[in-house]
Amino acid sequence: MAFKQQESWKNEIEKRRTFAIISHPDAGKTTLTEKFLLYGGAINLAGSVKGKKTAKHAVSDWMEIEKQRGISVTSSVLQFNYGGFCINILDTPGHQDFSEDTYRTLMAADSAVMVIDASKGVEAQTIKLFKVCLLRQIPIFTFINKMDRDANDPFELMDEIESVLGIATCPVNWPIGSGREFKGVYERDRKCITTFTAAMNGQKEVDTKEVDLNDPQVNWLIGEGYHSQLLEDIELLDGAGQELDMELVRQGKLSPVFFGSALTNFGVETFLKHFLKMTTPPLPRKADTGIIDPVSSDFSAFVFKIQANMNKAHRDRIAFMRICSGKFEAGMEVNHIQGGRKVKLSQPQQLMAQERKIVDEAYAGDIIGVFDPGIFSIGDTLTSSGQKFAYEGIPTFAPEHFARLRQMDTMKRKQFLKGVNQIAQEGAIQIFQEFNTGMEEIIVGVVGVLQFDVLLFRLNNEYNVEVKLDPLPYEHIRWIANKDGLDVEKIQGTSDMKRVKDLKGNPLLLFINSWSMGMVLDRNPGLVLEEFSRN
Ligand code: GDP
Image 1 (tube, rainbow, N blue to C red):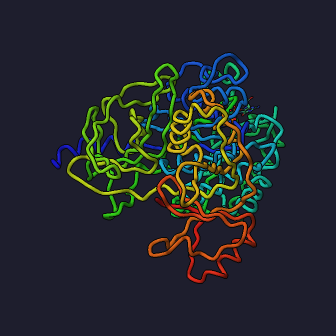
Image 2 (image 1 turned 135 degrees about the horizontal axis):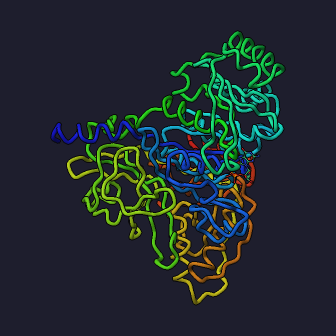
Image 3 (image 1 turned 180 degrees about the horizontal axis):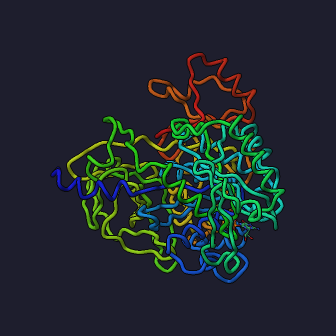
């Protein structure tokens, strides 16, 4: 590859910041995303992206079920520019039942922002999603939101994050008051105070006033009580707090914490500025041939998400891929490693603020969606013609709920099989078959029960087939890790154990309880069972 070419895309790649936002529903993820877009100049008035309670629907709310339930089932991607950076935000579903989708999205991200409601602290789904973040080992930044409402004590909030989530914290800014008395934030590194004036209820960028901590104005700007409280807090923080060790941040062991209010824009820009400086551009990634550098290698990417029927009129299926190295150009012919053939990536799309656009070029760090005629699977690698390697696969989690799928109208067998297979290929559900029979019986496995609802809804709505789900009593499923050279039929099972295989033909065992699983392990020395599958 010509050196000149690399130079031209080096700048572009170094500008990229690609991150995901996670939160418990209603903590303010959508509002914060919208405010980022506002500061990035991608929208003029906040409130135009999403109004859950109004007729307008967010870009990500493409599916009927999402509108009905008011939950976000899928994740979407937005790109915008701010302060010389090109930012890619990956939205994630807030509901824990879709944590597998969150995990895949995190695979495409270089860091994560965790939004926490200041009056609620760490909530149930924050914990689940956070665990997924930890698996991925990426830097996690915390934004404690809704400081304009009565909030828990900031020290208590930090303690809660540390004790419940088990990650060390280091506040980058510190709130002065809360609720109606939320005066502003103190920036610890620059030792200055930023006070805010609301602008059009948060629809416009907020007006700020910045003064040095030692400035005599501080006393009347925030009031004497808050001033002395702040000085006390600073002493405590500086004395006892953890230092901002960027190496620990990069390893996902220390989370920089910011306080603010997305609704009123207080602290949003401060957060954005610090966050962008603290995060890295795309870093080298591991492939089976070694480490792939984002700048010095030609185009490569992996598929982390497949989404069907984003546009009902077109019945399209889009494969979302994260570019890991080099530059992408529309119409490019690439190697589809797992498919073992060359493919042309046609009509690549990107979500820019509110619209889907056809892109001509994209760089490492970017996410593009390409039309998928049904050839891609999650985790597949694509490389430019000169190189051949595969990125590490995306693991499939062991489902925790199982049901037998029963088709109501047997005339529509073909439709039924097509629907179930496609939805499984997208990774929205997992399907299993009896180990030694054909497609006679289909067992569906999901991580969260809401995925069952999505399946029934989509089969009915998109494939026009009606099915019934008969719940099965299994609670555990395990992949057989040492399947080579092992006769699955000869495994000494318990009476309730069931042998099945997944879409790729990998053998698995189903158990009703962990006791039964333990028995089988005892009876079959040498048998290795795994909770997730990497292929
Ligand atoms: P998501 O489910 O995490 O995406 O949450 P949303 O962004 O949709 O916010 C949920 C609700 O909280 C909405 O009614 C928002 O207007 C409100 N909200 C979000 N951020 C703030 C904030 O900083 N202060 C206050 N008072 N409300 C907020």
